[in-house]
Image (tube, rainbow, N blue to C red; front, side):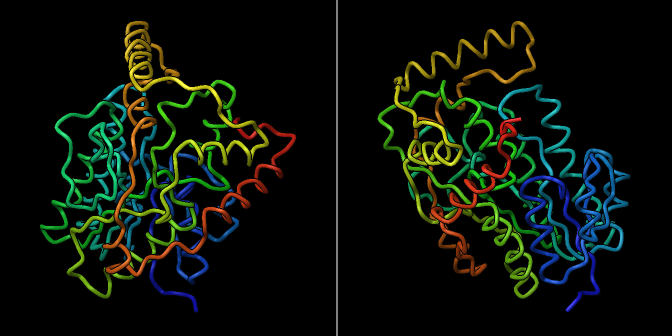
Length: 338
């Protein structure tokens, strides 16, 4: 049954945003999106698309007009670039969404954060949402996402019904960030450390489901506002096993060569210094943040999401990898890394 309400997805033309849009449409929702680009495929699906910059408060207010719920997924990802660019999109953009939700009378906001906001450079094994923010951030992305997350939580405590989700390493068909990076660097990748460090990931459709469940749960139970939830496959896997399986989905060989965590950090520090000195915009082959992430365990206790949101992954990692391989095969002979 079609819904009378309108739901906004910021970044609806993106990987996660697009998955949320498709799920909302399947549930009979009327959907509006806000993105900087044009997405004809969204219009073909019957989505009302507004082209605008999340950092433009007028565009965001226009997008939020007449909307009952907002899924705010738009963000600047990556680990390299000027702080001002990350702040503009991730922090100011989120402040604009908060402002537009308040002025437009939006009933609920679901904000897409990241577990990287609590990554302190060490192992994180089975931690829950009580883990604090680190004293120092080694990349602009987690720093600005943490600032944005705190702004959402503050707004929620002040009366805006909002939930923060922290999906970890989203992947699947349609991914133009994580999977292409792995495939493009496959032959050059080196295992960092002993390879036994486990990590959480989340298949894109599961991440989308968590967002929709969060909004539905918040509607039923307003007391959930101002809470944070880790989202994953609920099946930690050795990081390098996951990378090898993604490489296999792209018909590439597994990673065999290794380097020590200390060497990876040294290479990362040197790369950062060189790229900063030369003011290179291209992402370095290694950074301190990435070196620490590749060498450490980071998986999370998602009991709160299970209990409060009734979240359970619907697509297993094995099934997700099959779907990823099929998608990559359909792209052939095109280069999936482009």
